[in-house]
Every structure is written in structure tokens, then in C-alpha cells.
Length: 135
Image 1 (cartoon, rainbow, N blue to C red):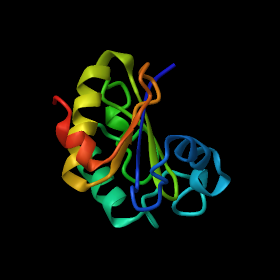
Image 2 (cartoon, rainbow, N blue to C red):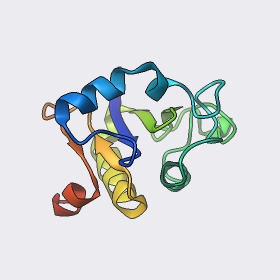
Image 3 (cartoon, helix red, strand yellow):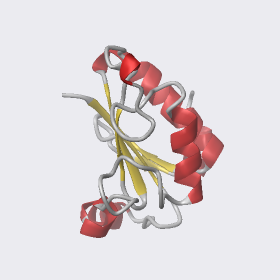
């Protein structure tokens, strides 16, 4: 079991909470950005691509073209699933607090939305909301 966080392209996501959760469940949101495996950033919107490139420097991908198998035993290794308008990430619980903070910081910097599926509040935030959050 992992600590799961998700970021999304706020231009593609509905603002209404119920609509947002329906949108997440739609098949086209979950399709890989590259049309094949969900591990390549090819085809991601520019803001999600910038987010991925920023975050993978601290939290290297477990699989895909940017995986470094020398990092395989690192607690920072992260399971990324790159959707059409989303990036779903699975972190080790050992680094959950660090990961949450890093994801929020990178989301603010790149202008993507943030959703914490592993936290009790489970609320989606856009850039304006994230800027108000304690970091």
C-alpha cells in the first residue's frame, strides 16, 4: 500500500466537487498520456510535464524512460502513472510528509491542481487554494 497523491491540469478539470470526482473516474482521464503505458511524459499538457520533470529529480520514477534502477531500493522511488490530464503518484509511507510538501510546492510552481487521495480530507485544490495552504 502506498501514499497516493494526484495532480491534474486545472484547465481540464471541473470546478464542482461532484463533477471533479466523476471526471476522475472517466476513462479518458485515466488513459496514458502517451497512449501506451502511462510511464512516458510524451503527450502531457505543458504544466503537468513541467511538474513531472521537477518532481522526478527528488522522487525518481520506479518505471519508464526516466527510471534509474540504481535507485530501486531508495525510499524516494515513486510509482508514477501519467494520464492524459493527471499524474497519479504512489509514494512510500516512510516519506509521506516529505512527498506531500514537495508535491504541493511543485504544484504551486507549475500551476497544476492537487488532490490527496490518501488523506482524510480528500479535497482537490487549485493553484489559488494551494497558495493559501500552510507549506
